[in-house]
View: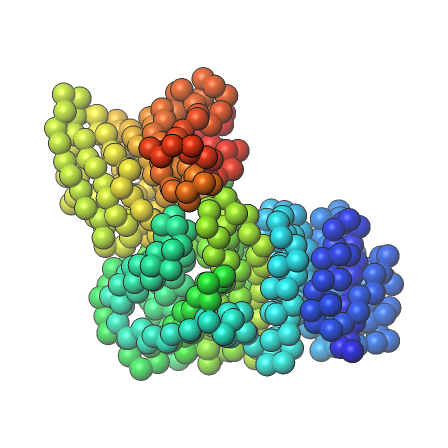
Length: 325
Length: 154
């Protein structure tokens, strides 16, 4: 039996959701009434993950304080941020407190439909992460996934690849609106790999102010590797650069951007728009970032392939930001 | 890639946009000088990437600052998504009509129906009934009305 999961939640659906995840993972669930008890348990036993309902007012701050009291700042090596899984009914944009927390690595938007499949999907992610300390497309897609590889060697390939993805998905009977959304996400992550990832010897971004329509051949280290697969149920895309320059604070700021009720201002001096990552997550994607400093940033997008947009938009999804030194 | 068809009407230019709005698009070059009220038909816009959003906003904000009047008709769902995600995406232009996505549960057919925003507001944002050409059509609105019409709420 694997190490147990701890659950701190008042939400009525969380125990059954986590029980499903644990069953697929071969683990038990220990429900803990409050944060101090959970932190106490963490000091005495190893656990596979701590799931925390952050919709309860004040709970996140209470948990941070309890953890700091027991283990010191950020919890130290015994309790890395990747151990914590924050559950919420609210969107990431409505959880700004969470994205500014040093404990933030995993965010689960609570499922609104097909809980069993959501649990199976999350368990698959946890299992692969535990086994390899990393997630690959093959971990999410079944045997029929047929993962294909593509090297991005020229900036002009970006739009061609996005269009090819759109066509590929429509051939797989994915509705055009959904195919367009996924193609747009591919466009955004490639744009980040081509223009935002490269840095100079001092780690400063090289192409921040470069217009995104600039046509250029990508030098050896600027070449990105893209993978795409579709197993009939899930579509997966990953893009890996060779820089490992992703900044945690910037990523978490961008993914939680919200211009729904406030105006967007076009900034001078920056060629990017700063809207792409938030659009991808709000569009329904599961979004997994893994950055190994100065080596690689890999972003993986997973979508469940529904036959109608309403289900697609409300699909279960989660966000992870994992950083290695 | 974005293509454009231009027509001159009594009120001013009518431009019909089709395709993807991304970093290679220059509205200044595609649309040119505007004399009168500009009407932008958005039925064929399939997707807009983040740089496309920026390009769009720069262009229409500049028109607004020059005192040019403009309006959007037959807005596709990719335009509606931006209107709902970015509060000032219309840049002061009037959204006259929008496309409503439907899918038929019986035959999986997808289609859109065009609806005037004034009519939608007059019915408290109720989704109008729509049917495809097939008999016994079981068409349902393929989005959440509350979210799709969010930009129309006062």
